Length: 437
Image 1: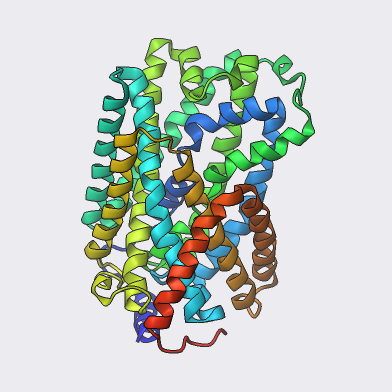
Image 2: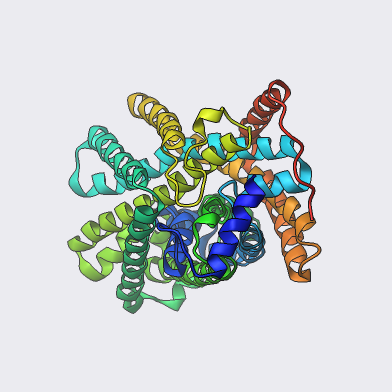
């Protein structure tokens, strides 16, 4: 049935009949940028500089290069078979229903745990401007969560337009931040280049894993593109260029302009803006923090809710969550479940004043596992298409295995979800998956 539906959709696209609510190239690029260019821009340039000094720029450049095969793999898969199941659909075709259920649970139950962390990141920046302590931080975070979920309750068309505004504004403000700090750049700040030794680059790269997740997110929205075969690849290329320039530019100017103080603050972006705008720079940093947070949350909420509906459609979750899996549909039931999970985690963190780092690392472990199995599926499914597609998938698999090692014992969380998913499969047998081709 799903394959028949996809054939009808493909035929509609060829005839120029595009259902309402479909994403275009600009909105798709904005969703990619919002998903990948996340809250890492707020603090990680300074934190990595603290870890490795100017040599942290090597880690930034390496992660950008590593993103190319990763992004290419998921773009090729999404363009070839646009479906709201995303990575779960590709894994089902390559390895069967059980593997697809496992990878679907990793994302659907892993990503909502990290969404409150995104809200707290943005809220912390805002609190530094207004004051008010933990109460204000928690209140701001709650407001950001509500806005993110309300935007998606009206469907991917509204979500895509919101994302276009958010990502465009964010990119503009980041460019402004880089330019105003440029006159303060001093090449002498690159010395000594590796004050903590070259081995410090590895731990710095581990910190950056959070900043480079997100390439799999838009695969769950691939069926929402008006022309997926064309626009998904174009959106990926556009996002790669934008993200690479902004990330590397921000990290470089942080080291050059702030020098030895670049590693002493977790709000390096605010420090850069204060160089050019004085006290107003702190306010501008808060605006950037809000745009960044909402943009990242919007992309993850939209894709996670859509995935839940697709998993329900395919029998990997209770059938009642299946509404809205079709292109243009609004998966409000699945969205509600995502909201309950994120809301519960948020309330716990707010009441206990918990550190959000465990939430980040648990989510990173789950998404890394999704990447690994998705890349393995890509290596199998793309082998009969183009050589570059298979090569990219193999390269991304090797990269992800390395990144998973860096997450350490937080891999326990995806292992727990694996066991739960396999129990579900044992109790709810599914029809055999379509063979890979």
